Image 1 (tube, rainbow, N blue to C red):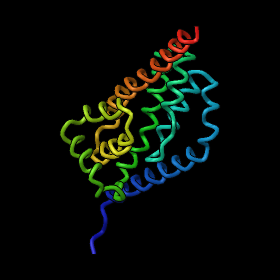
Image 2: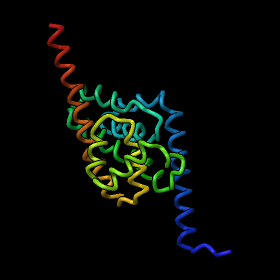
Image 3: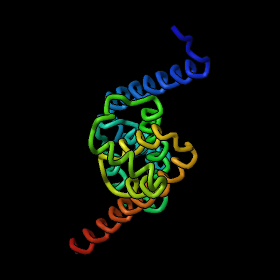
Image 4: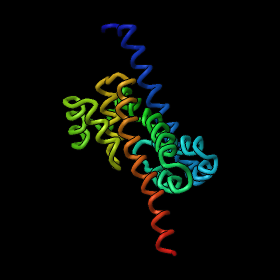
Length: 186
């Protein structure tokens, strides 16, 4: 029987802790989902926190984009995009941590295998593209980035670029919808 190397034991412990953190965060966010919209009343910091919470869930959907759309009509859309995009980016760390932890649960999913291959081949472009479009597959892209050990700083940068694009579209769409409704009501 061979003895485990100290570095591999530490990595196993870190992976287990990352997985437990992801599970805990997801359960917490899912439990407060009915009260999360109240945070939007706190302006840009509320939008940031709500977006962070909405994107910190793994697989379970949370309606962060809807708040971004609505708040784009209330606050300056660019400020909303930055607050929501930055919060969303930090929230996506849970997917990255799940990938780092060794996510054996989804290793055999065809979509995951495809995203893993795209992330391996195209790196940041895959992350930017998937972060910029409304898609339930971004969690899997974050998991793939973590599993491939993409440097966390690059993962955050690529995610932030994509999330800013997406949140700007939602925020400006919300602002335009109010202008449109105002014109229709006259």
